[in-house]
Image (tube, rainbow, N blue to C red; front, side, top):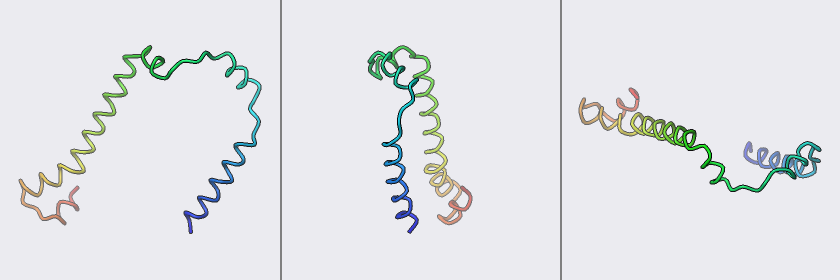
Length: 89
């Protein structure tokens, strides 16, 4: 039931958003903006791009280590059961 309510609200929100008028400032900004690809825009900030990539890789590695490898490590090196390793982590 919650998914049905959420789906109906999503449709209502999409219809409402489609009917809204844009502000004059947004229309002017859109007209004055030159068309540039996303990759070209990212190429202007190589340091920031590499910082985001590095932080994402670090977070992903930490998440994988904690959620996946930690249970196997506890099970194989310490000798805990599956239920005990799940409880510990």
